[in-house]
Image (cartoon, rainbow, N blue to C red; front, side, top):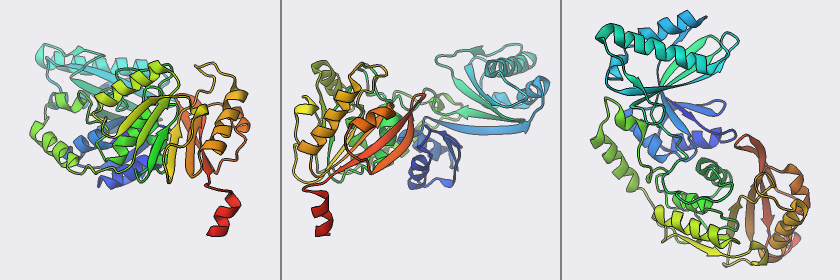
Length: 380
C-alpha cells in the first residue's frame, strides 16, 4: 500500500507506520509505501495522523501511448471491485514526458472501464465525482502506470470534528505533523496561544491520549468496497480504543478574538475532548505562562498571507512576550513569511522546512530557559 503525505512529514509518517507494525516501510517523496493486510488498511486509515490518503495498488504496467493505457485499463477484472449499478470516480496524476495531461488520462481510463462493462453486460456503471462507490487512482511515472484503489475517499485531514472555522484554518494533517516534528508526546503542559478554530490543541490532545486520529470521521471509501468487513473494522476500532492513555497535564487554546474562541470550543466539544482541552479568550501579548514546570507551545501565527498584520510589530511582540512571560518553555511556530523571523529578536534552535498548502514555510523552535541560558548550562 501507499500512504500519501505532505512534504517534510515522510519520516514522521514512516515512524507512525512502524509503530502500528506495518511491514517493509519505505520512504519516498511525499509518500511512504508499506505492506499490510485488509485489517491493517482499516487501522492505517483510522490511526495515521500524517497520512492524507491510503492507496491500495492493484496492478501496474509499462505503457507508451494512449492505446496502451486503454488496453491496460480494459484488461483489469473490474467486476471484482465494481458492480454495474455502482458509481466510480478516477483521479489521475502524471509525471511523464510521454503523457502530460492528467484529465485526459482520467477520461481515457473512464472510457476503458465503461466500454468493458457495456461490452460484457450491456450496461455501464455511472460516474459520481462527489460520493462514488469506488474511487480509482491512476499514477503514471514516465512509462509506468500504476492503478490503485483509494481506500480513504476524502482526504484524511477531514477528521470530522471541525464544523466551525475561522480565516486561514490550519490543515489537521499539517497540525498533527508539526506537533510530532516538535516532539510533542503529552509529557508536559501544552499551549496554543493563537488557537483559531482549535485544531492544534485538539490534535495535541489526541496525540497525548493516543486517540485514533480519524475516530470522528463519518466514513472511509473502503466501507463501500465489495469486500467490506464491518465486523473486522469494529474489532480493530475497539482494539485501537483500548490503547488510549491517561493525560495528567493541561492543554490550553487561547485566542484574542471571542468568535474564534467560541468556534474552537465547539470543535473541542465535537471531538469529545472537553475533559482534556480548555479554550479561553485572551491576548497572547498580554499573557504570562499559566503553569509551573515545562511548557510545550506550538502555534500558527498569521504571516500576512490571508490575515493582514504589521509583520515587524507583530513578530517582535512574539519575541518580547516569550522572553518576558514564558520561562521554561519550548516554543514552536510555523511561518510562511521567512523575513518575519528576523523581527522575533531570538535565535531559533531549530528550523524545519515544511509547506503550508503551496507556501514554503518554516517550523521554528525557540528554547526559553528558566533563568539565563548561561546559568542553565552551568547547572548541568
